Length: 314
Length: 314
Picture 1 (cartoon, one colour):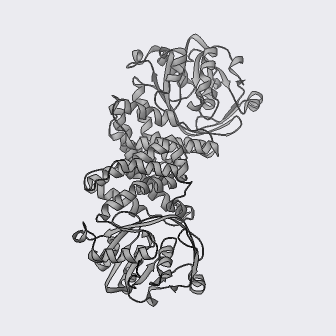
Picture 2 (cartoon, rainbow over the protein chains, first blue to last red):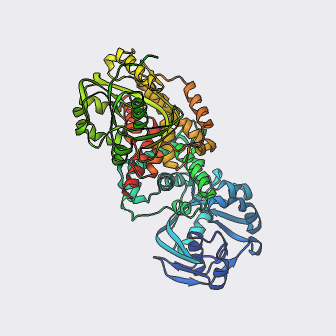
Picture 3 (cartoon, each protein chain N blue to C red):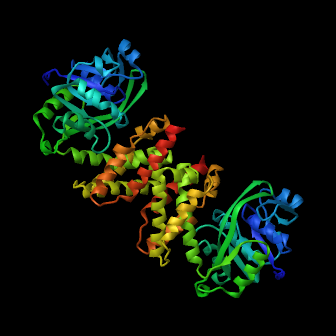
């Protein structure tokens, strides 16, 4: 593979996801700027330390503790939690080149809307990450497994095809050994990911249970499956058809997984805000707008709203 | 009120409910035998101590640590949790006179079935208690508020009227200052109580929240109301019509209540088994048998089954 063009990147949120992908891009010579919060001093002085099936490496990086020291870039990667999106407007206004593009790698449905409100929908790409990665210390990321990104155009006018800029970005990411796949249907990709996220993120928080416990108990395995069907039916009401074999595939894959605490469960246990609105509220509202009430998603949403609030007040 | 006839009673389960009603009956001269578990020694030697809006009193009682020392009685009151029902067969076979009657004061739907399986449905009465009472120490019961019993015939062939034995029993209980009301429709009484028990018992356990917290948060208040409607619709599918004003009444009454931990929440926190099957499983199965799936009750049922099991294993 010949070396692709050099692009400038801003990583908004140097956590388990942004830190990993950013470091992999920097490692192959891309111009990557990291916005770093709590562990800024460590990352500025010692760089990032990555342990990954792709490679174990340490790399000095261009760290910033504020967007105001960052240059304008070709690609801004939104990698923080949606609960931090109030900072998006200042950030994107400041750091994106006029012809730049935003790649939103957040969980949930319509999570690109906040970025689109700042830079316009036609400048926004969205992607789902299938990644098992944890930040284990300041500037120290442990990438355990998986790592694929499936992404596509967000604007309706650009959906339905793989655009040239998607091809260029895919080339850049793949050269960095990131398993990136362009999709003509971002909405389908997002709904399909929700088929897993809604039951397992939600139930792990409400029941205080890892995926293996949910799958081993017949009552909660049934409930996880019921919730998956709620997502499939909600997607259908919104015009997106998910093949029904996807439910069986997700259940089988989860049953085979090692005991796993979802990132939402980890956030909850650490008393951080959880992404209730993007993962549960947005799909629920989308379905309700089409006169389809997904009862179990709705119930989970209300339970999580309560728990999130009580958790942060405690 | 002239003194009513003297009957013999067996109280199966001398807790906050059985201990209170039994002591009130003994206090006015009824022949009451108490089956006592953990605090048998205390109750045998020092009797029961009652603090109640009705009266504060201490009373020596006929305590038994096994049904085998109990005489045959006119009325057996089933006052333990449904989770202890495996002991019913031995108990009722031993202690009920041939012409005796069983009064089932347990929570849930079709909770009389276990007793009816032993003594025949025609010998069974069922009742709902609207009672706020706690056992605060060995043989020591603190009755806080309310206390009414609404009861009726369990056998279909006897439903629809107030039978002579119901009138006699009402007279005996009222003489003991227990607010007892006969009902021609026990099934309606049970479903109406579930309109409260299903949302507030269930959500208090799943969310770790007292009634006031559930009512103050708009998300969970909405969810409690949704669950109430699920119960109303499930009841209707099963042939029992609940006036829709009952939902509003229950919500208003709960909003006005002092912060309150449901007895199910107290059991859960003490790692005792909770009555998942009688309060959630039985109404759910009754509705499903009529081809009505109450989605939110179903979800709560599966969540509680998981939590109850995990709680007892921990």
